[in-house]
Length: 191
Ligand SMILES: [Zn+2]
Image 1 (tube, rainbow, N blue to C red):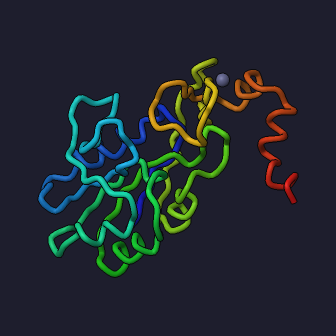
Image 2: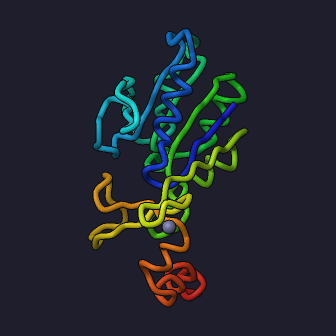
């Protein structure tokens, strides 16, 4: 079984993982993972909404899950899955063949409103997807989008600084239609 929580920044995805974690009485059979790339709070799953943290193993590629999972492992948690690399077949193998319950969380889109890394593939194989909305920081509506307020030197920047959650209406207020059109239809323009 694979259940995935997605949404923009500030949508309490990690909190959703931790709430699920807390409901499991016997924690002996759980293993938690997060990307080494995520330099915030290394070694733990941590949400701004909750005080407690949960130890997590840092990995870079999904294939590393196979080194850590053993016969005692029944449930795994993976946070910030968009930062991981590798083949989602590993998740299918662990879920279907090894009968491990997998709870994952991550960003579905970048702040450029493009599908983020391996997340689309994770969603394709998930048994259940929970799409969590954040609160629009400009107007208070439900916010499905992440927006970066600063100037970017690299494609994606790890961290929270400069990232806001927005609803579509407020995205259009922050950025004019021509620039949004250019961004969304980028791939078509190149062909
Ligand atoms: Zn708004």
